[in-house]
Image 1: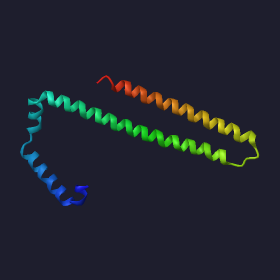
Image 2: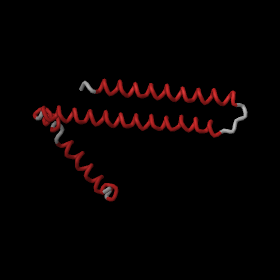
Image 3: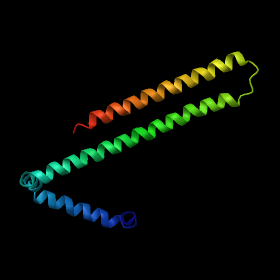
Length: 119
């Protein structure tokens, strides 16, 4: 919030950082070499954070698709259809589609979690 209220300060700070990095081009390479244990630990932390962020983005997408599929089912349910022969199979088809999709999504998330757990 502070950065949003002080955009000029953020720009000046970024310019100062770029100038410092240009003046000390090998600093971070030396730092990582001299602090190898910290570097490895921080690298793992960043990887976990990235995976968590990616996983949460997947969950948000899955929830959105879920809501759309359920709305389609609700829309069919609300229709006043005199031709029950066509609306019932369509409902069943949507329900099966939703359940298959949900199971497939859960399996993909579980497999991704297992693959990521080895690091």
